[in-house]
Length: 266
View 1: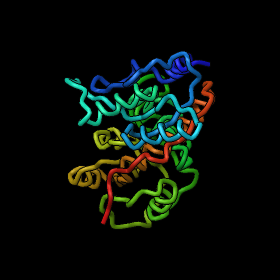
View 2: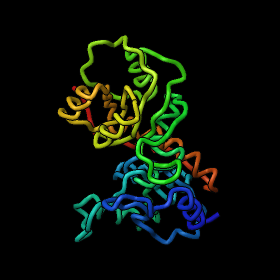
View 3: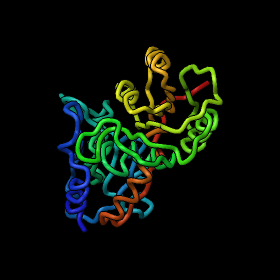
């Protein structure tokens, strides 16, 4: 199978036309690789470190020819390509080493086995539906029932075990022994969905990139807001994406080891 055929199959499942108006899904850099068999390095964020990893793998005899990323490399217009700019350097290395770069972002967020679905699977949520449906059975976020009621303390421990974030932040709550049975999840920046989550009857909302007043809003709405960080809530879907690309016909997939969580805690 060729890269072109693989991308066509992928886009039947996660159509780039479903992306948000501000997004930039699809090809970011496309060298002359469309007829080649797909050998893919999957990452959350396409960085120079990931490109260096792909180039090093090629040098070791693992012929990576496509970086498949969740986050786009290019947002908005690009007025120039320069070697002192990361995008320009990425383009230079991509064409120089014949390695393409493709992104599946808000289209991948919505589908089965996408970013939110994988979070729901990690917590073994049952009777799962989207927080905000965009089309039949698909949409942003997921909400469902825990397989058995557990305390808030136990749920926080489970999230920590499954996602291994640098730290968990959650909205002030007096009773860690509160019984929880309904949970909402959304990988990445999901604070704008707080009002929608409240309407689902969820008691806890797992997401990331939440601000001070969003924790206040959640507390005032009797919703426990849990921020596990952008990387921790979306990286698990990248591993699932490796499996999906193999199912679609990729000759080789590999999960990046140089993908980074850009936050450090002292």
